[in-house]
Image (cartoon, rainbow over all chains, first blue to last red; front, side):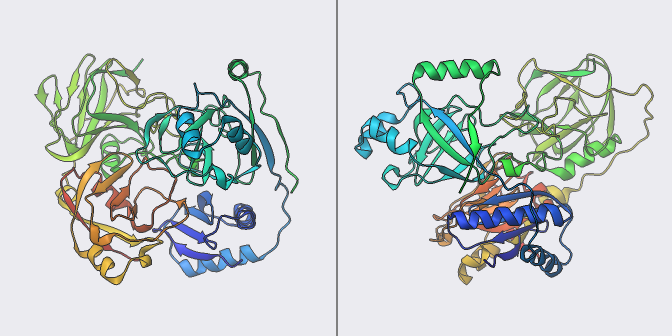
Length: 240
Length: 285
């Protein structure tokens, strides 16, 4: 796919693919990421986004062309990879007015009934392109075009943790309380980020999310089970 | 236990170290001291490890009480520190006794001051770092009454006259060194010229970003897909607003990244206040 290489300051290398949101590019990025992790040295972090991969280096770049040559070689060399499995996570969402702080406004401006919204929002298998914005916040691809809505002109100051929102062509979950410009249509009791866990975030780029509707009673029941560490998020291996 | 109690918080005090590295891929910001040069200086004065956490204070400092004797040093912005109401020197090693009150006022020059204590502040480490951040550490901004644990203080500590002169250039310098950012070439030659000759006025200053006054001549129509950003990334919005991202910035952003400040430039900018002006100068790898 011929990605391009740029120095990003003195201690990072930015690798870019064509500016498109696509599954093919995502998989190519994730494959390259794995190769870099196993064969490249001298970096302390590696992040991905829709069409880019950024390598954060321990030391300032001395010979950029040489680094690029090494990386190009790694990109082109096929290697046997052990674990490229991706998972589908079933995420419960309560689409109730109590949690969907902007639900009334959203339905009115989109001219949709609540049932139509729930049906449209729970149908797709959303792809996690990368995590960013907030700790553990997944950037999801796959929102039906009929649910698009321009972001709020004035962002809300405190969107509660767990809020499920729609903004622009995207949908996602606020993993912690934060200001935000998306319309909140519901809430999930599932914590997406827990700093005290060894692996604070169970979602990974390339995984899939499926939302399913729950009642308010179920929301509190699941919250309770989570508190007692008695709830497991349903997941299964993803088969393309 | 060795600890310090907050009698009165300042404008924005937080425990910081050099940062939380290696977690950007799960959306966790780097955080850490805004002016790493001054913070390192404070640690060096009392022969601390550079990994020790310090207290970062912005604009107006706090009033603190030492619950045990300790060895400390203060560096960065001058907030007229006083020990039991008597002015004390910055940039030098100081001994404080049990019950001593260390108080800070408004910054006379600079914006951020650093307090180091022997063996560092010992709040809970999260994801390998002490750096305070909402949703990551329990303690974010210092509040009245909070007790902060500090490292064990040594009984015998030689007091020489180790003090370091303040490098005024660090506070007076108005030129920030920057590399061309990934989207620098999206600017027209005229815009590039404006970016590198004009002065830009700071209108807002937080740990997340420094914002500059709108520059209508830098307005553009370039869009990029959300991609990586880091402390020091200078973004330009479509309406011509420049933003220099700082230590608490998000890990990804959607505006063109036109410059990347050097580490030293980040430290220099961290001492600037709202209304001050800065210029950018291009440096190369």
